[in-house]
Image (cartoon, rainbow, N blue to C red):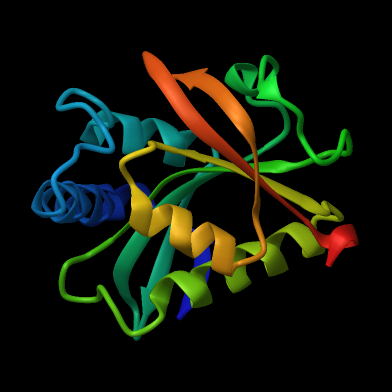
Length: 168
């Protein structure tokens, strides 16, 4: 699997990954994202801003995420504390197609995101998720992220996690 900037022509495939993740989340009994966010336009906007990334295997989009280098305004206020005050990237909207789910993709995805960070001279990654998303919490813990506190994002409280290369 490779991580690369997504193309506008792939926005529909990237959005389908989000839709597949929504279906998966519902099967687990929760909604990670509300029905009107993210939309396919959100993906188009991410790609236009240079923050939309595709996970690709054999030239096929199998996953999508938004990677932002720099501050996330919602992360400025945290009930808790971040591990570091150094530059960081934010990962939002990570999703995989239903046909690709399983088989350790999340582990491989975070390895690729960590490589992306290091190539950009950034040592930290911040992510948020809902309390109900136990699968993502397990993945984040497994990948070396630490729970840092609660933030307000997208209309509600979210669990905030950070990975810091210097603490591994």
